[in-house]
Image: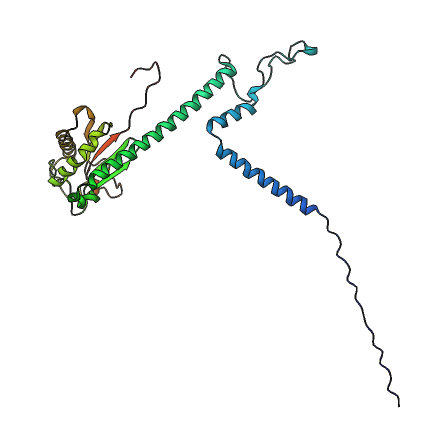
Length: 288
């Protein structure tokens, strides 16, 4: 008996091509990249331009560049504007000074700002140089190395502060006394030559800590801090600083603690020598 022939069916699946989705997303992406490039370019330009250049650009694009007069540009109206109010501006003008006066004022203002910045940089440079000189003088005296934590040198708005501060277990003055320890005198005599070489005038201020609750002061704090400031001035004067180098010698009692939250800490007891910044020159025609 013959075996029946099996029919073999081969199914071929034809894959259809994907439909075209369009290129709108490419255009949107290109616009986004362009906008980001423009943004970063703008940020770079802002950082690279000076304040004077920014003011110049603002003046160039400001509406105040439009004429403020009531005259037109000629032609049919023969130089007369329709409205007597004339051209409008977005900012009030100084009629007496005019646009030229405003620009001169802007230049003077920007020049003053530049001068202030130069003066600040110069003062910072002088403070850094003075601090380096004082630290070098102290490093040359190994016998006072143990007092390194008692001597704090820091810049301030008024000038460079050199503070002789107490700490737990080591004070710069005996308790209740206006006469310093010998080690304190040695520190002052060590930095005196460096102070003498610097041009700054000096301000000396005495401070003390607040009394602990329940304790009784042996000496009135105003007299104590003033006496200590005077003692520091006398030591520096004896080491060669002329009297005209001292701008002020005052005592602040316990009114200006270093640590306001802990006014009775030993570190609040200190005498601060401030190398005052040079006073800015007066404008022409102004007398002190």
